[in-house]
Length: 635
Ligand code: WT7
Image (cartoon, rainbow, N blue to C red; front, top):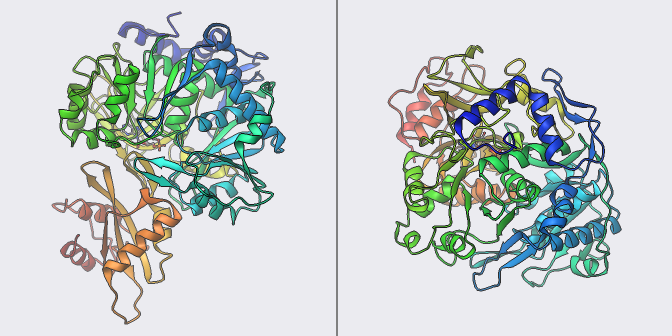
């Protein structure tokens, strides 16, 4: 059915037109033909961006795991669902068939039930990239528990604030994780977090590295013995279309992370449909997304999207540099990967190694390359295209967000002509628009503005957990009746979009979304610090790196700045995680502030980027003299 699988450009325009002219009809047809429903919907869409309230397929009943697993058993039971590639290349690859996945998810679901978890309960998952991570997610979905996955690089403090925000009852973790040549003590981190999480009654522990961990009596339980005893059948819980499926935290412009809530039916329909088209997925493909499942990319395009299509999805536990920088290419060759989806920061890190390693491997299985997480610069795009795709595999530069649930602006491979650094055209059903500084919609091509979306799409987040007001303020109050993305973009003469980067206080470092506010809050915890401001500056591999301006309390004592820098980064690591560490710290006597006391970040960004030719208007500063002082001492 052509609406479901687009194969050429005219068809794209035709299907796109239908999807925006008759969105209800369009999505209804997709929903009807490609999924199992326990009960049909009463209404395809109802929405009001002013409230905001968005409902897709309201009245319908379903279970997403029946669509991800059970319905494939008739035709694909021995097909590999998850292809697990361990950290150590000498350890065996694990092929988990759909049948085995069914059994393992059912067992896990029964274990969760036996631990008192039922529909609507929140379960925190803090695991490395091992099969149990995907299995735990699906087990939650099977019994209607709401999963909240926390990326296994976050610190104890970050875990505790997320666990408490959504009031999780149970945590699934492991004794530790492998990361290249290192091991990480995940259990120790969780133990520390749980000291301040009174609501968690149980912690289930996967044995991965066989380390000697302490188990707290009554709370901590090894998972395997429980699985061994569990039955391998577990009936699906019947879920309503708008029941929450999961919470996933993302940073924002205040210290508290935002628990984005995704619901069941719309998320299912959109991730399945976008996966199929954006990767031009075909039945015998081996699809690999290198992201961590701790991020939305992994939720939508390692777990749900691929499994909904009955695909084989690769899960890689390790890092691109271990045992050497050829590891990605080794995996592509070994498993004859057909679609390869990664982040610009990884491409830049690999490009720095030259072309010798990448040329050693047979990459001829590749058909489609993907990029996600941050703007891809021209140089990285060409390196990827020339050396990985050998100029024959189209690159899909996919723009989207935790909040959007699925890919929003992207080429469709073999359909949309690509253009380096451009995410190109809106995906089917997506209605982007650009807004001017004065809040007008820019209707022409060849314009630049703030990127908004005008109409709901099925996989959009419905709220922020326990904070609907913040959801409204963050996304729907800047422009009336529009979802504001927080990104800037330009549209070229043919209507292609190029994302220019964040226009708010979020900085994308190595593809990770970091808010400046939580980092500043952490820095300010240091007893010697009076005030701080964090900005991004361009970095060759990370895209952006973090630059902190720090003013110290005046105590009359002299201080060792080198030690202070270490201590500040240590505090950041404890509060957030190592990904938020500052690359550069400048101690200064003051920060440039407007008369109303607001830090003028624009100036600090320019100084950190060594782009001080034109600092713009500084006449509203209360302390203009500090600017020269900061410039003279730039790091
Ligand atoms: C922010 C969202 C979507 C999965 C990973 C990140 C930036 C994402 C692109 C791209 C330019 C991009 C945006 C966006 N971003 N993809 N292809 N080109 N920028 O999810 O952590 O929610 O971050 O990542 O700034 O707003 P996230």
